[in-house]
Image (cartoon, rainbow, N blue to C red):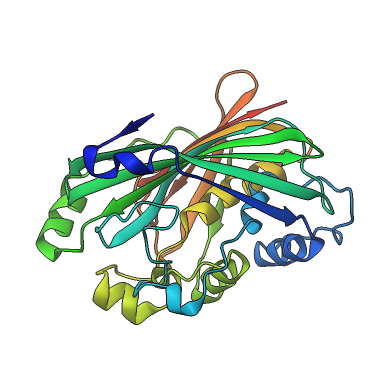
Length: 286
């Protein structure tokens, strides 16, 4: 466990949530991703990453900050930086989660660190989740959150110009996604995510300085595994890790790619409309 001095007291902070894996959110996400799946039934295995539809915090409207997120200082530390986004995560799928099951999630903050990047101060918070069903561990997850400074146009422009780019390998499977405000709104609604950068264009562009609506990091990760499911429907995902490198926006299409890596693993990545890698991921399958 690690924490910088201002946030040391938040290390080890925990919470415990209960939920039931009802079929409604599964059917809704399948429709949102334009999948031709049969209606979900009790006992069906939950697709990997679709557990993000559950254990949703239900903050009252008066508890939200100006960005649409819950005000900080409850479970997550009160980091004063205004921008907050998913930076990545690592998941170990121990046993399948199944529709209709009651489940429990145990969460704990395991690390907090501050640093400086090309666009200014950054604070990274890592949260570990364990999901249990029938008294057994089903899923382990480490979730990285990054907090950033308010936008400064000249700094942001320089950071984009000087950001290192990662060469994309040769893809075996690819798919183009044309995001729009409806897709982003539906995913926000499914995950009860009030963050305004995903659906409020005026806020995203005029307050946070983005060129358009921001595509959710977890949506991109879900779409990467959805590409794997479409191309290899019998593959069983054992482990999955992803890292966000730069945001994607609804003003341009983006592409999903997959290629074999080592035996038993697939390399996955997303690129923007210019071919620049925006997210990398690895899925270990059997």
